[in-house]
Amino acid sequence: MTKLDEETSQAPQTAAAAPLLPIPKVDIAVFCQSEEVREAIGTAAIDRRMARATVAVKAGGIKEAAALYGGVTSPNLVVVESDEGEARLMAALETLAMECVTGTKVIVIGRSNDVGLYKKLLDAGVSDYLVTPLEPMDFVAAVHRCFRHSTEEKLGRIVAFVGAKGGTGSSTLAHNVAYAMSKRVDADVLLADLDLQSGTLGLNFDIEAKHGMVDVLQSPDRLDDVLLRRLAVSYTDRLHLLPATTDLDKFINLREEDVDHLLDVARSSSWHVVVDLPYALTQWTRKILLEADEIVITATPDLAGMRNAKSLVDFLRKARPNDPPPRLVLNKVGTPKLQEIKPKDFLAAVGLEESVSLA
Image (cartoon, rainbow, N blue to C red; front, side):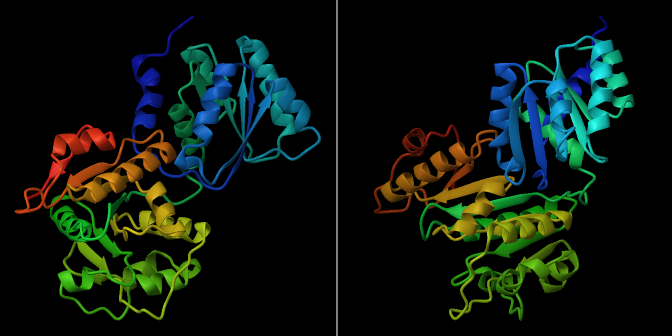
């Protein structure tokens, strides 16, 4: 049996290693024949990128899928595991196609690493073919490939800054990093202040804005790329600002779908988005932390900073098992007359291997 050439066999790994965007709201049915595939799918289903998708895992293969969808409407995506030979596999897929509604996508999971079979499956209309042993992120990448054309291609990345407690300098760090990014990357950068009642973005950049994040968040369902660009203040050709426009009379409580829409619009603008979050997390700021592409925690080298940073790191590790750990910045290191925890001891306590120290 012919092995896949090097380029083909490495393609899924490359896709899985690259930053993946969230999967849209779709229904997925997976028919598993082996326990290893069932476990891989279970791990993939709890990944943050799959938060909007509904994944139903069922026992069986193509035959069971065809029998089921002969009587009920098929979901957006059907995933089937099969160990059949090529002829029987193609015949079974043809039967399944007859029972599925138009537009249903199909992913096949098999054991044959054969480039000929791979091409025949694609020619027959199968969306993707995955070879066991199956890695969870390979499955997430395959689902993303199935639906990447259903929404506008999104090029921007979201970097969230959060302090382990008040006074760590997380906002100042976020502001400086956003300004540096606007000078060094070939893309626009949007700096959004989500500390709605005490944000310092307007002060630090010496701007007075009539509109800001409060206006964006009050009507999230109306937000689109055009409105976002109109509300943002252009500080330089590349740097755009959304200050908090502090108003103690206004309280914002976003739903999860509102946050999803906000992040989708931010990504679809093709900007890199730097989000300055308050250290006191709410349900919707927590949602942003879970969906950000990268997270930077700023802490001071004291006992409270170490405790809170450890809690944040532990929470993010559990909620984002397929992502790298957050970056840690230790700020105000070496402050005179203050007792502090040494960086190596701080890292050991919070369970990270490296950090950036700022005097």
